[in-house]
Length: 123
Image (cartoon, one colour):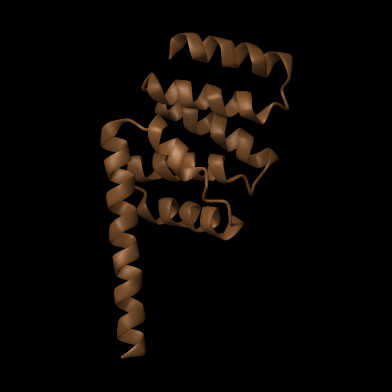
């Protein structure tokens, strides 16, 4: 991760508008345990492109990791509204095991909650 971070940082310096390098840099920071720095970098990337699913999904995980369930849910809703959920599966490979389980469990229970509420409303 440190080598990836150095390379991605260099790429960002060469082209500050390169979103892929920013995301790669944030992923490396996350892998090294520098979650706050990754979060800040993702917020900068989001400010330049507010509807980018890969950024929103990464931010959702970081919010869930911090215990901010409402914020995490809002970001996941935005990912779904963009219609581009294809980023979720590759991102799961980047997440650490405990964070992958957190995201899967959260999404599973949230989906069950939504289904239960819809069934109660219909009944």
